Image (cartoon, rainbow over all chains, first blue to last red):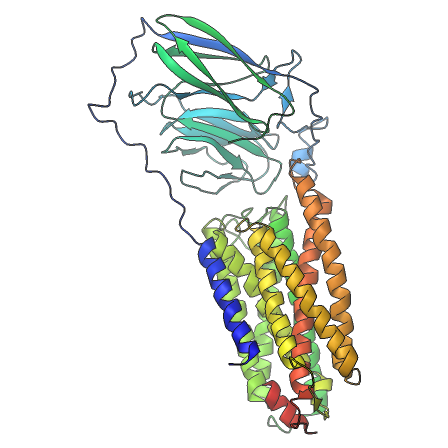
Length: 265
Length: 310
């Protein structure tokens, strides 16, 4: 066998290994199973339910928001009289952070929680997603609207749920779907307008909230117990803290992010 | 008029047509690079139609994705003409087969493009699509080389002295550049880290330097080899700078909300020069097979050279 042939065979084998490596099956958790009778804790008693309120603050100098270039689609630029800024990090006037997903990460166990009847609505308006961050329960109906006079494609990119990509021309009917597994967070993007990005947090329970223009959040209806509360921010990742609430107790907590907070999970 | 009797003028026309097809294929590679760099691969969710029509509204990233499909369809049409033209008029059987291989490659490439869209860009398929694009471009460049006037003139084969022979060195260099392009595609599609691509760059640089030095030392009288060597050296230098620039702008792009223009431009230029580097190496390999003979085998028959190349 000549040197060329030996090298050819070696390189082809290497190439095959690379492609096989790329094609490896990613393990996905099974869909949320129904809890067994032994695992199921009693439903939450409204008479003892506790509430956690709080705010998410930002420490340090707020990063300068990127200006979004929408000139690839005239219909998008026409809808904004002033420059549009990225919503990746929005520091409110009172020093708090907007678009932070706060949720109970550990604690509720396998207690069954009925799926919320009201749908979660995600609109495409001014070539932006509205809201930028939203929470939903497993199997809760998610309605997607297109209020723009341009075509969008809506493309959730989950790690543990089914990925899909559908087009929504102007004036199209609402699109209805749901997510079968817990996942924090699912990025949603429009491949036509690459600046458009939204995040959906999917949980088995209803104990989540998204901070608004005052940076505050409220999680209510919690059964008394020990919890791990987490706050996820698009750029700075997740921070956690332990919280214990008693019956009917209202507890206040505060999360803090800073420019040095690393993007975690 | 049979294949052997066809006029030289007619074959010149065919050669020009193949050259145009190769140039359009290069343009197609660039447009394909723009699709990936702008994250436009799924801007059109359906295939083979785009939003159920042949001409969707060309807004946002639809421009790149549908533009890519339009250029691809045009190149496909040109390739059909090349394959049929060669089949009917080309006297050399292996060149006719090369034309058919190009046709098969462009059909497979179209199907891979469709599959990657319909299955939401599975990495192995996207990488295979990027790799087959390079193979198809090489086939077109090969056809452009072997249908050219230079290939038809009688050549004096000279001894391929040195270890390893230049024929082997050029073949290995071509293969390694191709693997390097696959590693680049794997990095681009987030299947691999950048490290294998960096290691590949080092290996390619060593091989290209060896090949260029060999030609400068022993084969300067063979014009096609000399030209290919200079081109390889120039393209490699440019490619290394483009790779560095593309990587640095990509790191900076992580902080932005959409692909920045400098990152897109440098990355696509890196891809395009990579394709040219591979194509030049393919041309060098073909010419080396035709113009060089292992010691003691030198003959001055172009037909024999062609058989060796085949």
